[in-house]
Image 1 (cartoon, helix red, strand yellow):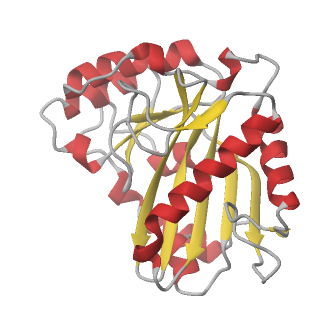
Image 2 (image 1 turned 90 degrees about the vertical axis):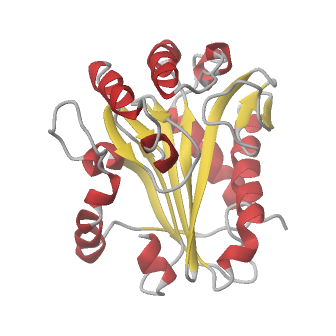
Length: 262
């Protein structure tokens, strides 16, 4: 999708979706001595494994989470990396605050896949991680917000981070359900849409066309771990998950991008 948006073949796109259980490793992880064992651990825990092209270290996408993918055309994409991170993190914080949560932007010491633009609750538990990939004329900001399955998240990440020989404090990992069990993916998406609509963003629902799906299939090999415990499965299918909102954003002077403030 990023390539098509960057080429001007498709408009700016925001996709919010429910993924399947998949462990996304980074290219940095793949170079570590314990990577093969980490992939095995993920498989034993019921997670497909894939290599993502942005981000720092292993992060779990869970069935009870909301993943996001924001593709933007920008001829000066490399000059606006930080503003895009700020915009996305601020959007998630605004949505979670509307749901009554004490959401904040910032890294918690010892969190998994640490990042300056992680979103946490009350400065104690990381619930959202974000990464960014930049190509010529475009950028993709993507990541995941954990809703539930906190115990499974921690139980899976602990041995994986041990195998990769990376620091991780399990008490810093969790989901928004740890703070309000009534909240689910649908409530989060409604809150995000509400924030964006209030900011003048206009949505046009859309689907992936055949050309985009075909192009994605050709890129699957880039995301396959060098060594898989089963050798089965398509990582693209696990990452793809179930789309809950896929909309083109038709930008105009009165219609800012997701994180822009009026």
